[in-house]
Amino acid sequence: MSDLLEGIETSVVYYGGILFVMLYFLRLWLRGPTTGSDNTKRLDGKVVVITGANTGIGKITATDLAKRGARVIICCRDMKRANAGLADIKAESGNDEVEIVQLDLASLRSVRQAALKLSRKEEKIDYLINNAGVMMCPQWKTEDGFDMQMGTNHFGHFLFTELLTPLVKKAATEDFTPRIVILSSLAHGGAKEGISFDDINFEESFQTMQAYSQSKLANILHAKELARRLEGTGVSVYALHPGVIATELGRHLKGGKIIGWILTPVLGLMSFLIKTPFHGAQTTLYCTLEDSIEKDSGKYYSDCGVAKTSTKHAEDMEAAKKLWDLSEKVVNRHSL
Image (tube, rainbow, N blue to C red):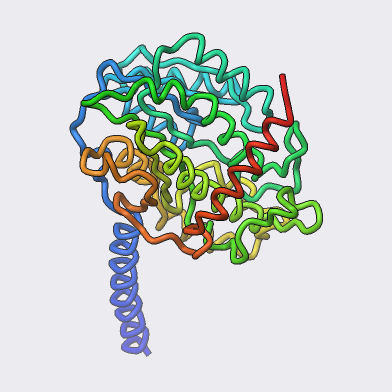
């Protein structure tokens, strides 16, 4: 009997050790390269505007760019949390040239006010990073009546980008290419039928994952059409998938109706395997800093390299133009 128990104990230790090693190397692979932060480029004298940078990968990105000497403007909705994030970024970067502009992407009025403030204050913007987003929230509406995910992730950023593009263009010189970096997600592949142009706010049929997927597809289509429209201006545009990351973005997944208690152990394992905010910020930093991709405008990136999009709809330039036209019509329908 003792020999049997000893054999079982030995097997558990042996196979448990193998499992741990496999999970460890899987973790390293899933977290990806650190090519972004490894770049030694300095950004002295450059101006960075980044949305949603008081927490998560946005905060890591803002801190890294501030360390390089850039003047960083974080655009956040909640000023209390923004001020806490600002203090952390200044302390961690050693750079006091970090500022806040209040921005609620779920309000076109707020978007216009933030852009107006920046336009009156700044002569140029060298890097515009559309980082903020919401994920798989309930069927909420923005101030302007948009679906919360489509409104925040796409329409709000679309208007913000349009209003600030003139400042980005002003940064272009013979020796410098300003960049617009738009965070999307691998989840764009979930939009199997593309953008539901006839039900853009999911009033006829709402599924939170579908709304999220289409908003992330919209980010890629926005980047591609923007890149096309900015050809010859000296401005480059990139879309990217940062990875599956342990951030507050997935707060609506915890418990409740969407996932439920049965998947709690799975989420626990995922939190061990998936990217930290540091690793999640790498592709954003790569698209912001890497000199070799300076002219590769309109491409989609993941794990610090060019990647294939997950659906043919992300390469549909007719859909990109249609979304652009619809977005212009929708955001211009509202005024201050």
